[in-house]
Figure 1: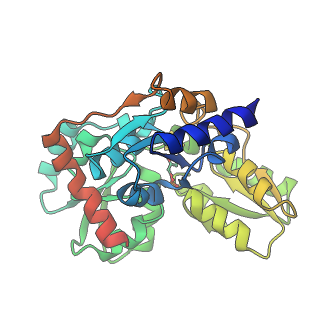
Figure 2: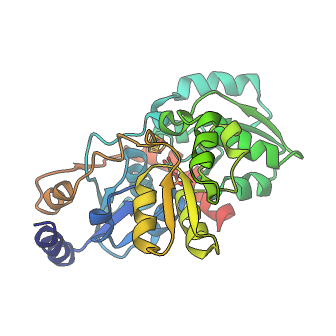
Length: 304
Ligand code: 13P
Ligand code: SF4
């Protein structure tokens, strides 16, 4: 059944000139039919170069908005319209405009997990894999980092030459993980390396052997000489890694590391999009798009 649906999706996407982009948190069966699977930085870069006239984004809303901002001529569908990222909705433009007045000499650096509207007030956009490189490279010494306090703290600690102001937003899924979860997982798997996402709390990242984006964690585990790994990000990554590296062992840092939003998108959603019977077409007001895309273009310029 899954194989039949996948075969039909592969046929339809070719016939209808559609590129399927999937974030690494998608299920294995969606990744198998995607043209490209990656972290949020790689997806943004790929969106610029995809040749097809339409894109189906299997991920969350800000990812589909990013594709539309970079490729306004393309038809962009969010595979499941209910898939949002709660972190992206945490801060609004009006509040950040007020904060900016308090710190006029600070550049606003926005994590890509933000709405298009919030991006219009940002000087630079970053992702988890590019934040350190970009914050280091930008000429400004003073940085107001929004919205993720954990990623911001992780970057600020590595750039003592810069001044950071942080606000207290973040990912509800990664923030659930506590130091005690790490200690318990280490006790269960004493020989395993701990790989975590920088959206985790500082007390968790401090104990990790590697901190990086979803793709960064996967690359590290695949190339590592290690044989066992505790994975401190959404649990889909545990499954993907186990498929890719059957001779290694992967354990979730916590059974609670599940992003309910990323879990919404299913293979039938992708099929429905291709049949013209599902998903949501992303429509952005042109003025908003032009204002919001600037910080993403700077991200690609500084991020490479
Ligand atoms: P990545 O940049 O690692 O893809 O992270 C996006 C995200 O939402 C992680 O929770
Ligand atoms: Fe958003 Fe967290 Fe889910 Fe990533 S894991 S999409 S940051 S809620």
